[in-house]
Image (cartoon, rainbow, N blue to C red; front, side):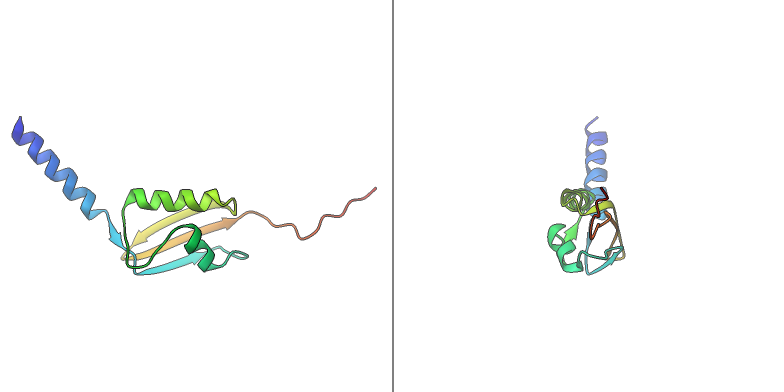
Length: 98
């Protein structure tokens, strides 16, 4: 029983370490009004930082909490964090007809 627990623990620890990657580059798609720098600031995204799945979930949650975006999708592959966004529509003016 102890051997099974030990093997399971090693597997879980090994799996959690291999899922994290260091972000060396970011690609942001879909932003029109919101600058890349603002997205990185609100998402709390830093280069040369290691991100796990839970960290990426926090980034998505942070970006949704701004209420700037209708859809947020994040992928991390080969040390490149890709953020695909869809901004909420923006109304420049509203005309009332009486």
